[in-house]
Length: 435
Image (cartoon, rainbow, N blue to C red; front, side, top):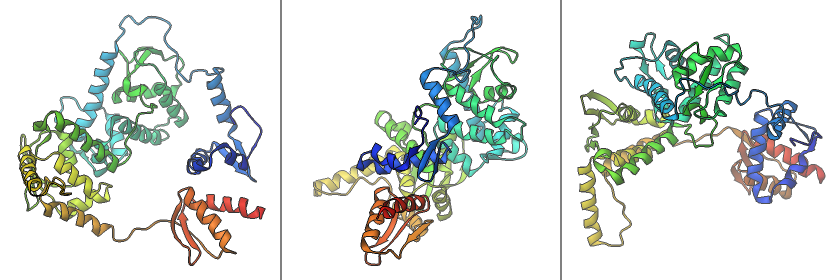
């Protein structure tokens, strides 16, 4: 469709994919439509002409313009290497993260960064000293760096208009940074006024490096060049928690002393031997912290603290896994000894190693069940079909594309997701109209 400017019939899409690829096909079409890249009218699909032209230019190498930056044509007398850029970016970004978790810093982030943290809801407070991290901020800390950057940049984009900046120029510059080469210097001559104004903020985030604010060149850091990479990013508290648990599990194999730092009693009192701001922030997601010492924090796991975590998207299994993964080595050793004794009595036992006391594990899962009693979905109910064949055709199609939530063959009814409604209707118009 990029090179064929003629309209395409919607029926042609079905001939482009195999029968087992319907779900992927519908997901692709839905995504393209949501980006307004594909318009459908009277069963005819037309690709957005601006998108077609620009992508075609990129693919053929013509009329690319400045989308990929303009490298400087003169050598930099103060050229920096990749190691310097990595250290610079790391220092800038870690300063932001340490400020969020309350680490004492010699130099706090710039006013622009603090404003963005407040605007994005990651921190709350009018003055730097009064700023405290929010629940959203804790979830933010669990994400990988790429996801964190995009979270802030999207908020920056939303602030663009209030800052009297052209949001199109802002977005163009962000995507340009993602296509630049690490270690090369690029000219400011092709940047718009909005993009020039962005340089100060991007320096504060560690995305670019300039030796002086008056310099006519800039270096993208690794934070910038990986913005549009295909590396997996974490978008939710649940997936982020999985990453934290996985990393801790990887550490256990090499150094159990560093990984084991939590003791939890049967009365749900918790003692964590750590001074890591990030680990303390993670614990605060599901533990009511009471006191903090130089290398120890204490707290209590309560119904309210666990419910708060559950409502934020973290599951009971993840909480249990985190506590087991970070359990003190002595707790782990005791659990292994008890498990070995069970194996002596029954070598075929299906029971698994339990590091936590059963009452702790069971209670945390029971608190989750309190929230899982009723599940609701927004969607549409299909009923009153003309005959069995009509019901079977549409019900089967809804199931194939993954939008079917419930069905009752005896009553000839089925329920689909809100997003899947239009797809089922369009399919019905195509298939049943023929008959």
